[in-house]
Length: 141
Image (cartoon, rainbow, N blue to C red; front, side):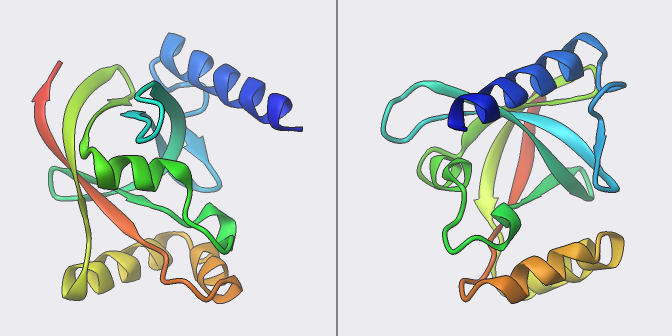
């Protein structure tokens, strides 16, 4: 089953990249970017498509994993090494990740749930507080 998931992710990334986001640029009502981060244990590059919202010039990711008990690996990778690259449509952007907290987190969560209410169901499914990361652009590559 894990191999099928990996194949699905690889195909989604491939089609997103070759079409500049015209294929795979939206999912479940949200805009999609492709994140490439460094694995905290392996040091290998990890790439996957993720739904995002905007906060001014920054991109915001939500580590919901569908309400699973644990946050996804990409969250821990970015927390431990905040430097990453995203592709948004045809632009590659170097970013630095920051875990949102306090009032900023509450503001972003409200914005997310207003746009995509299913995230509230994800929060109800788990006892952990679902983290959000703000990706601050460093430069356009």
